[in-house]
Image 1 (cartoon, helix red, strand yellow):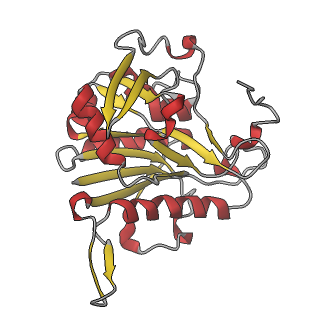
Image 2: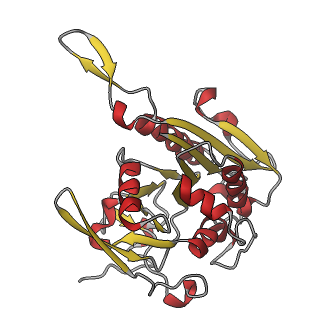
Length: 288
C-alpha cells in the first residue's frame, strides 16, 4: 500500500497565543512532531523485524501490512521547528509556503490533489497528532468496504493524563446540532451497524466531524478534488483552523464516528493535556 501523509506544521512564540504552536517553550512541539512522524514509520513502514532467538537473526515482520510512506510537512513563513527534529532526513519532505498560518490545511489539500493517482491513501494531520494503532488503515478499509466511498470514518481524538478525575478523555464530543447543520444533513443514513471479530459496532453521523485529520482512499480523494467547494477557502466552520481541516470534507462525505461506548475502535492521540485538564475545572465530570 502507498500512503501520502501531509502534516500542517507551524510554530511562532506569542505571549498572547492561545494555541500550543504559539507557546514560549518550543520543546513540547518538537517532541510532538517527532513522535507523530516516528509513529507513522514504525507502524506502517517496511523496516519492521522479529528477532529469532534460536538463530540469533532478525527476520522481516508484518509484511502483509507494510506500506510505502511519503510524509510531506507543509510550513509557512519560515515559522517552523524542522531543523530541531532529531530525525533522519529521509523521514519526510519539506513543503514551504507563504500561507496564513491558520490556513495551512488548505495548502495540504493542494499537495494531496497534486499527487492524485500515485497513492492508495491520502492523509492530513495536524502536527500534534499521533497514531498508535497498527491496524488503523485496516479498520478504515473495512469500514469503506461496508459503507461505501461516500461515507468517511473519522477517528476520535483523545488525551491521556494522570489526575484525580480521568486517565483518558476524548476531546471532540458533540457540538450543538446548529453548528454543523448548514454543512451536513445528519438525518441522511444517521446510523450504520456492523460486526468485526464477533463484536457488534455502531457508527453515527458525527455532530462534531472535526478530528484535526482525515484519511481518504484513492477513490475518495479523486471524488473530493472534483467538487466545486474543494479549495474554496471557506472558513465558516468554527474558525479558520477547523475549517481548513474539516469543512470541505464535511460538505463532501457522510462523516461517521463510533459511539462513545466504542470510541477506541478508531482513535488518534492528541499531544499534551490541554483538554483533559479542563475536566474538574471548567468541565464537570458527569456522575452517570
